Amino acid sequence: MNTATLTVNQRTYNTPGTPTVIVCIDGCEQEYINQAVQAGHAPFFARLSQGGTVLSGDCVMPSFTNPNNLSIVTGAPPSVHGICGNYFFDPEQNAEVLMNDARYLRAPTILAQLAKAGGKVAVVTAKDKLRSLLGHGLQGICFSAEKADQATLVDNGIEDVLAKVGLPLPSVYSADLSEFVFAAGVMLLRTERPDLMYLSTTDYVQHKFAPGTEGANSFYAMMDRYLQELDRLGAVIGITADHGMNAKSDALGKPNIVFLQDLLDRTAGPGKARVLLPITDPYVVHHGALGSYATVYVSNPADIPAIQQQLRRIPEVEDVLDRASAAARFELPPDRIGDLVVLSHRLSVLGTSSSQHDLSGLTVPLRSHGGLSEQRVPLLFNRVLTDVPQRRLRNFDVIDLALNHTA
Ligand SMILES: [Zn+2]
Image (cartoon, rainbow, N blue to C red):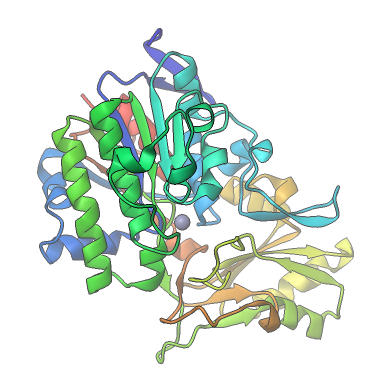
């Protein structure tokens, strides 16, 4: 590398002297690791209390996948990088638009900047939807497990991925999708030894299985095996999550859903307000596009205070913030969040209209995220950190902690 430090989005990073692997375990409520450790399934995680560092931090709101993955790789909140969900309402197009495209990204990633400075960088994601955002402007290796069979040297910086990893192409709805990410990470560390590698899994397992269950423990045991291997190969490892995960059901396992669009159509009148769920994405089978965060676009600005008051009276609703308050409190881009931001309590989720949600794919009680109750996530390192900042830590401090606070 041709520089000792690198400044990206007003934060300065030491360039890695040792290969550094940053892992984002999608939907990793801390209790998953705790339970797997207690049951003896996770010796790597268990050892972190001695030779490593165990911290926790807050993810960005909304506690969704894309905003947090982008925060982690930019070291900055959504007000800086611009990605605050999968969807937003674009007044220019007068339509709900998908925010998965890199043209919505407003800040460079640490990954791309390190590669520009001569560093070797590799990114492996589970789902392909994140690949173009994470790989924006990146000269290096970047591919998804989902489309590993289609990776080419020109587009992804690597080819023959299936043969190199030694696993078949995984199904997009499976634990195997995340296993492929780790197996690819071990292969890349062995063969390419990137200076910085970012591995991002999918929360398919966490949406289905509660902490401590067989399905969850075997998933964490799998990750633990690969982490041991990355550790043995000499990498500095920093682990965090994009968000936590909670049960969103009543005592009998029926989802607690507030259908906001139905409610507003009934009370304020049809056409007065449009509810948009930024969790909606092309892969909704496991959560039915239901999370604890919603945005509301109000047709007539004069109606905003009354609708805010009305939403606040719903027992399942934890808070309703207007645009300016939400942007300030959660460091969100005001032009992409709607007139109101609605948060539900830990056990509840927010929907639009009951007719818009297909719950037939929910074969187990709903588990989801999006709210304040899924904000706390692990920050774990296989090294002893020095001079950890004495302030509120965030998941997007993980690269700073791994590069600037390891000996
Ligand atoms: Zn996620």
